[in-house]
Length: 325
Image (tube, helix red, strand yellow):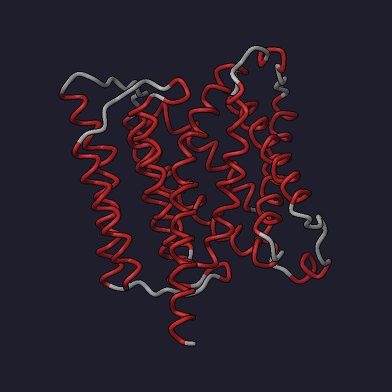
């Protein structure tokens, strides 16, 4: 009986890793799709609103198809902590933060700073059991695993970027604002921390509502309403006419986002916030390399280097050490 329980636990954990890697791989595809959508509609907030709306509709349909009800016990609202409803707002903050960071930090630091914040916050949430998470104390082995993951991230993004610069293959435009550069870097770390917080909050919400789909839908509805408010206050129109004749995949961003949030809601109670964040980050970087290699969704093709492959292996070793600690 004990061996069967251990085997079942191992299978559940491996399934959670597979889900985390899959949604991580899908995330840069969402970024590519939403970037195309932004070019068409001319506004990042309009593009995000359309993406969130599609994701909300997709989750709504999934609930219908799975036969789940849309309601939940009123005691959830009365007795549950207020913070469990703000996951969608944190998602909007993370999205807006990336929009603001890119022209000031460049593409490389816009990836690295939030990832550092995600890993840092994920470990803190696990260590202290914040947001009703299961406690996973920080150990020396776990910290060493985190160092390996960060080295892998730097190797995959920054080192490869440096090598491409040396070869004259990459030119990145960046607004120079040396006086405030460190503040923007700190802001990047902060947005990453908010992303990890969203992951923990949505994981708890899915547990309370007893449905990962419901938790993801609530998060998307909150995010959609927040973006709608931004559009109303800023009086930005939605130019739907520009969307005619665009490729069908331009609408996939919202669906991928819904799968991403739903996947996180599902795996966080199984593996914890810290490991969930790191697994998704590895998947994210793998997805980015695939897009670069094959030029999917109109992206420019770039060859995958040996440095990037070695860096991914280092990250996987880091995850194994974190898991074993």
